Length: 161
Image 1 (cartoon, helix red, strand yellow):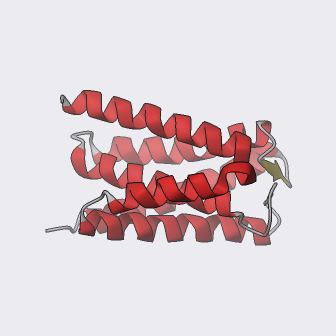
Image 2 (tube, rainbow, N blue to C red; image 1 turned 30 degrees about the vertical axis):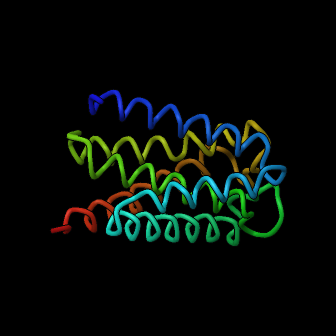
């Protein structure tokens, strides 16, 4: 299959997954976790490590934003299981995308920096999260956080053999 078609299918599949997780949250948490774990197991071992590190870093960033009062998740706990599943699936997709695509790294960093906050904005509109400060402030902090997260991830992946 053509690589461009694979990337397109991967993006559409993730968007569908994201939508289902954000809409149904706890009602499908075991399905979301199972699908994310399956996606992780399908990666090559080194990609799996990168994906797990990205998922842990992203979940930590969300936990920080939650603890500092920037946002609140509609779900159980500071960081609900549905959000952890979403992070793992995103990390698997992002790892696959960054290790197989010919897109320039700067474009991938730009996509992550802009796309992350847009996803949270949409999640807020779908009542999955609540911004605890004005949207401009929350999204600005998120853009900075996503920029740092994606830059460090690309530095890590760029060192692969």
